Length: 360
Image 1 (tube, rainbow, N blue to C red):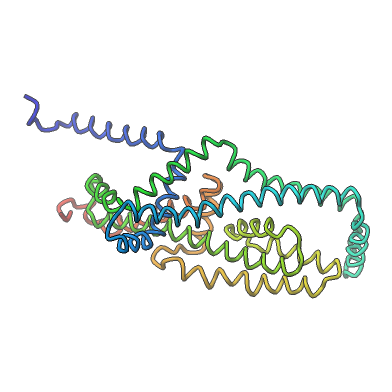
Image 2 (cartoon, rainbow, N blue to C red; image 1 turned 60 degrees about the vertical axis):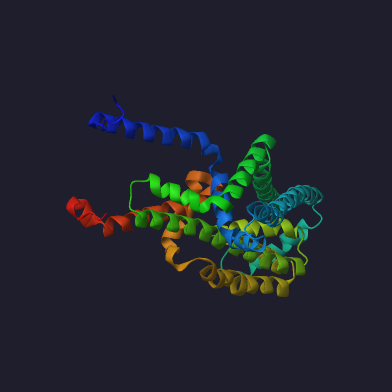
């Protein structure tokens, strides 16, 4: 009988092969939904304190507490995302139409060209004057690039109703599960992976903290920076404020910052005669908007997962290049996984070189 037979070397090799094969196939099976899975993990961790409070209020009734948590998450995350996406689509379309009409009519281009050329003449070195045709070509190209960038992002996000529905469905199902079964998932991982619990706890803690911290540090701080700059644009009477604000939020996530929008707008305002408004916008960007990152990020990101600036920059840029937009989260997670692995190796190096020192 084979019931009590011990595994042979070939049997162990076959079992390892089966485990690896099943894990790889399962990963390929769910690869399309990895963004939804990671987002569910992050959102569940962020809203876990609120869920535990609902559990306390409802006297540990999981169904009611989960329903209340999901309603709060829906109202605070999903609904605003849909509204903002709709506004971006409308404003980018209107901006493209208005800009094309302006460039065709050329009502304000002559004055702008004259003002720029007058400013160029005052420079201590010779600069060739610009023409109205150059302004038309460059402005049309810039506006088209911005409009296409925003529209492409919105259209790609909503290109397939079925794909969007399945992503949201997976996200909601996983979110509801993680709110109630996080401890069970962690226990299963600990029992399955052949590593000491303290090492597994280190990986789980570092990775989940990193994902949550990156989400808060990048998206929340960037949103505050973009809104802070957008409020000033609104006060100064700049058109299409919502579109510019969303663009500044995206740029604030990246190393370039909101200044890539506000500084050119301020220069145009100064050239157009609104010197006070342009100077104020530059000072607001440099003093307030840029320093919000330095003030808020340390308060939102846990110190034990904060990456050095150089590694943080490399992880974000590398993640963007390799994975696209979701690389903003994947990149730092991969880097922190590598650093945690090196830390584990450094701590247990003696045990690896001398198996007799391995602790139970």
